[in-house]
Length: 198
Image (tube, rainbow, N blue to C red; front, side):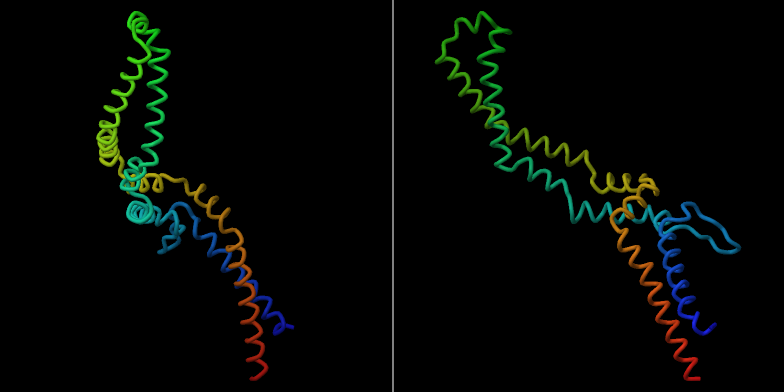
């Protein structure tokens, strides 16, 4: 009877060991001293290191200010900006000019409005690339992607991190627990086999 319970005991041991190992990814949150050992969950213990590495990876590999610059100066996006400017100029010359400068509006012919609009459009088209370039430079100087990611991850709640990882990897964690039980059971069967051989 004792021999037959070996696979069950081994399976329980494998499952419990893996269950505890998964829990110890996040717990204990703070350092706990047991005799000469200091125990702390892997993620809480390595959070700063994780933040550093993640910040570097994101800024070097995933997202950089160069990407932002490219998006801002993309001809397709500039076309949309020109369209908005065109609409704003029409609105100003047709509506707001009448409110802010009624006398000038009365004496201005349609032909003159068209010329003013064309001149303003031409000037804005010349100015726009330079303005966007200056704006992109300002963003590049002021936004440090690596530092921003680092600060966000360092200040991230361990509870929230655990919740997110569990929601993503719940099936995988469960599989690891079950695998521990299955491997334990197999080891138990091997032990019975060895005992029988003896």
